[in-house]
Image (cartoon, rainbow, N blue to C red):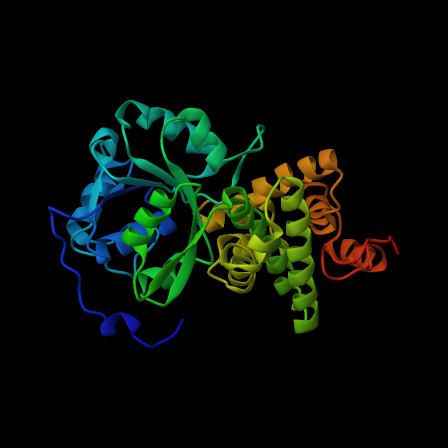
Length: 357
């Protein structure tokens, strides 16, 4: 991480209770905390909902997230709240940073308190069994609310440290896009707009697959040529799958596509990269995820996307190979050699037709 103190170059923003946007983040993990801290730093009236009352009280007292971001002091104005109704009622924007397996149940819990709040997903995953994206779940559980998704190359520790970063807010509503930009955009954190909700969402979910692959590759100390090939084939694979589901392929040229893919696949701060690295070093999946202590969405995404790709007849060799290695016990090096021998010969997706080698 850079030693430059970019944050020292900014003038502090004082919250004006009469005009400040009221923002609540649901979920006290690393990324949820980073977004809550960013909103508070921008002068928003900001709360973060944390299930455990003791943890919430500790955060309010120490201004630290001791479990996920213990080395970073949070904004004084950021308030932790354990009561869900208090956290949600009469707010302007609700940012939902809940793991995909609990996302639906949390929306069901907040439904009685929702009136006109905009609900934004920060979760980069796919619901198991249903293959629902988080935006699909928002529409199903809260059909009347304006909604969107936020996704990009957003490593939480760098954001909290004040390192310059950017992300994408995707929504069909211009008002939602504008409100989220007002809440989060600053000289240190740029928020770009898109109307391709599924494209942005797919970029955030799919890149976790390839971060696991890159972590495994790093454990074998592969060269830069190999990493470059893996990264670009991953982008092609993501694009093929996303277009089949109705996304705009150009979305993957932006922050939520190649930007997020690059950051997640190259940083040891990435949870999915860490899991992949541990697997590459010979640890079991249970050992890798237990040691991580956080949710690595990529593991569930591998299962879901492999199944869906087979149903849609989409060629996704990296995803299939990861499934074989992680869940079927296939030797990683044998799988890699097999992939190199076979496959499709055209480079840039959608330019030339594919022919099997």
